[in-house]
Image (tube, rainbow, N blue to C red; front, side, top):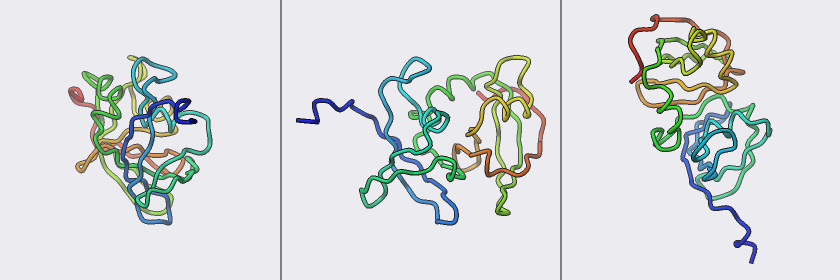
Amino acid sequence: MLESFQVPKDQATVVMELPPDVPARVVIFLSPFAEHHRGQETVSDLFRNSSPFLPVRNAEGQSVLVRKKAVRAMKVLEPERVEWLYFEMRDGAPRYRISLSFYDGLDMEGYIVATTPVGHQRVSDVVNLTGPFIHIEAEDGVYLLNLAHVSTIRIVEEAHGDAG
């Protein structure tokens, strides 16, 4: 009976890093309609809204509420499908190679794409206007990183060309 009141949800799989635990594959549920843009909700939409907890399904099939502020990073599987808006916005945008250091001593290198408005496309603009979670394109995939876990960001290579 209650199933008739449920909104159908798409599923996105991510590999979530919740220190000090080892990264774990979880399923996140996406609404077919986003609150602030056209089309389907994205993973980044869920991590940028104000609700402190997010329901996920772990590898054992259990529902778990995760405190979003505790998540250091997520590798997004099938990013072109579940982060479709980011891929649409990144076409033609400048990209920078950066190195990030986390408070726990880990480092990550990848590309940040300036999907911010023209005139606000420096790395400092992107991290200050886009957060708290930002997209990083690393060699092994697309990540959403929680800037609250980042201690420093170093520009390795200035913007060249576009992200497309």
